[in-house]
Length: 624
Image (cartoon, rainbow, N blue to C red):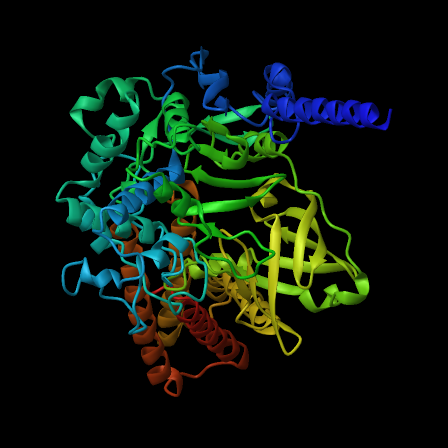
């Protein structure tokens, strides 16, 4: 009797576990039945299409089979042309980087690249001219974005193909300064990736686009996409490219501009979601232990192994892929250009992938929101509060390590810092650019996102590196954040002084004209010094006008070369020299003229104000 009962129990349990495995085979990682995926995605996406998102092309894979392949919205809103799921071409943005890292790993497999070797042995002598630290930069540093390069948006992308240079020339023109010691800070870098692609180009003795198309595209049967768009043979791909848009307000979309790159390996690939699905399939574990991209299946395992992490409880970087702390470990990469947004996400453990391409700048709701729904979230373990430090220690303002430190655009990052506030002893609120998210502490100084904007999905885990009770660094798999290096007092004083100068030089020409008219009516004799003071004020107004034009141009389109804004930098130098000349003439005539106290005060105020303005421009690097 007992023996029979035991057999029945074993059979029942085996049926239960078989059913569980079977169910997992037919669900997304988050648990959505595959039979219901299309309806789920339709319901989710249709909430945003036409409202906050122009259009999208989505492919979902499970066990190397297409579960869903569908287009949503319009590729051309003005002419009401819908997105075709099969041949609609999008800008992939930084998903392009994954093709660089696969190329690198192919050469690693062949013994032609050593991930731990100084990359300068592969480069022409003296190729890198702005290095600060005389220590090796390895290929792993490039893959992990820890080479220490600052951000540089000039000469990264252009609105037309005409300014585009070769990859080598593009790297020389846009070389950034090295501002961090290699291996210490994650500062996401387009330059690093294109530098790695250039090394592939040098070793293979083929242009990178030719290498990628021969060793990746052709092997996978990728036919409707290209590694380099400005080629005559890509006429059909260009014809199939959908229009990109910017969201003006809900339901209102403005046509945006194309994005052409000299450093195209970092974000210049164009193609379909179908072709990206072929790429995703090649990155999935295969049952026959063979891989199209690598001769040895172990190379794929190496590529997906963690290559950098600041803490064992924090997702890191896997040889160029971002680790995602979902229900199951994900490997992902997003992409953004001035007109398109995208997301590429695979879950090797579940043999699952989702590719989302949208034709809209800075799109989050579908690119990241839908991805989160499909791959699921990791449950937060219960923790003992007594074992955790108080969250008040994390409060402060922080700057992205991925920032411009040289030149006038450094100011932008101080205007939009990451702000951390304590909610209670174990929870914090993180805000950036008006977006907010709440995080809870799960391990000492490790915080997991609980609710908030989709913008924070890829940084859903934060690690605070502490020293003597102060935050030294916030780490994420994408980019670290560092404490603001200027005091709140100084930033406030700078803002107040600039606003004062702005108001003064906008108003002063009108005030001086009124004073001049009144003096004529009162028949007050003119003095020579007045002419120089008036001219000095005109120069101050010219400074403000030049700055205004510069800001408007950058806000309207930041995909431009440095040569386009350089004339305005030159204007600042000319105005500064002119100001100095006028001040000298004013001071030379100061004692020669009989001036009333009111006149002396006004004239002195003009000198002091323009000196303050020039000081601020020097401080915030508007001369470089």
